[in-house]
Length: 113
Image (tube, rainbow, N blue to C red; front, side, top):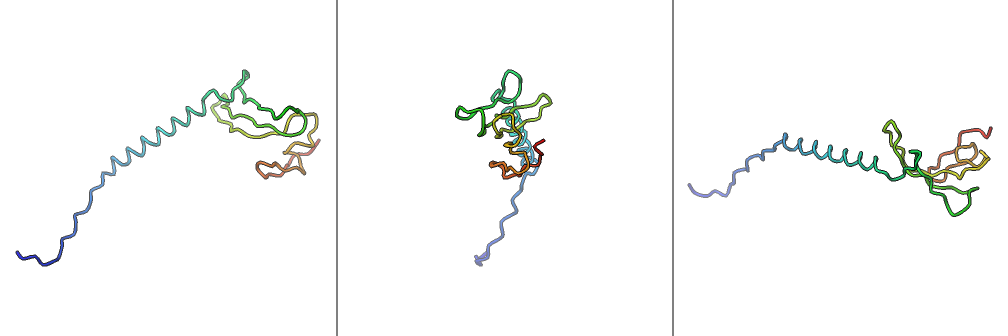
């Protein structure tokens, strides 16, 4: 046979969908288990089992502080957040009407009463 310059198309590539799906499932399981292990870590726990509070620079009135994440007894993970420092007034809480949480931009909805 003489060469005509026409090439034959390559055969289709066989994809093992079963093997690929198993790999995805295994990867998802590993990620889920490692995320659960991180969430159940000891970071953020105090002796009461609730998240610890890291206070700001010295003052307990005014200002804010960050709270550590923790896992509730029912297994629900509570993410770290920010809160106003505790005091006897509800007027300066971010959740009070007229105030805005500077971290989330969410307006307060609770009355001062």
